[in-house]
Length: 394
Ligand code: OAD
Image 1 (cartoon, rainbow, N blue to C red):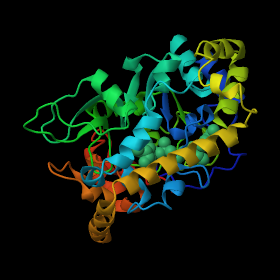
Image 2 (cartoon, rainbow, N blue to C red):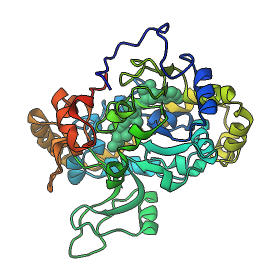
Image 3 (cartoon, rainbow, N blue to C red):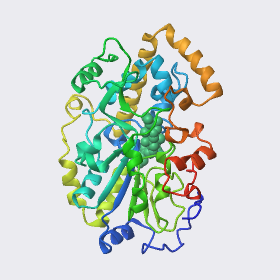
Image 4 (tube, helix red, strand yellow):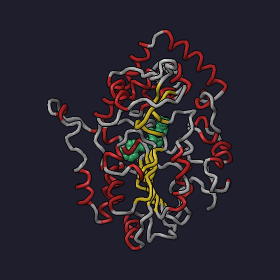
């Protein structure tokens, strides 16, 4: 694999594996070669049509909206250092995003269909909404790269906290503490926060993209490391399909990259049309609890998808604002403390001991320098040479 630059290869440049640089050629490739090892990589954009805001969209993204609140920086809500001092904003968000409220999207059902057709090698997701599993993708086919709400533990003594109690506490918008009275540490779902290491499953499966016969990347800005580097480990001659509103991560720079710069649901429908799977896809999606979220809408005028997303992010922002006010004077103190920390370090460095190796931890673009992206990620992807790592286009 050579060095990827972020310039898209001219549309006219002949692909080396596909018959053309379009989705029909990818469908033909899947059928002719009977492709079975497809790796899918997803992010928050896959769930926006379910009504869950993503993080970095300029208007409807969570971070743009949280930026106007009294947080030291928008990502603080997912920062382990901040959580230790003020867990309420995270738990306010958790209350709203806790799995079970939303219906999977057509994009999720497309992944489930790939699996049912015996063609899914692995799904790497950054999402914590569990909609992949609700759509029918089996747990053993999913790598929750940024963890999930499935389990939780005390951040001090690591004692696990019971699932049923967690559900109740989150529903009541409370903050759970360790079941060991002598400890009483804060409990946190096993979601990876900035400054924490990625789960073992990510490391165990990180070599799979290099074994894939096709990669599909959907709904992610590819800005958070080390996940953002996964597409670059797909072999040079292996086709990669990006379905996203915008071009990200240098996708489009190889001769066999195919870009569908559009809505994920529309993109997978187009893909399914090309494969002759459209009817099966719609059936697969119809199985995903079509009533979920519909009831409360019956009494109110129908809203567009965009309006629903605006409402959701507005509600989340307001709730977190309230939780910040509730946490009262402490928030100003915390802000001052954290500003001191962030002035000299990154959000991830606000983490606590035991410190994972720098390349192992979740980092944002502003904390990711070329050197951490490339050389130090060798530790995360040791099966690859350093020169195979590329910096994602930000
Ligand atoms: P981002 O919000 O960074 O990126 C979402 C991407 O999806 C953007 O490029 C959007 O343009 C695109 N998008 C949104 N809706 C779409 C749609 N319906 N169809 C097509 N494209 C769409 O979300 P992630 O890349 O998932 O970490 O963010 C990565 C991580 O940053 C998250 O896992 C989270 C966050 O901090 C943690 O919380 C630990």
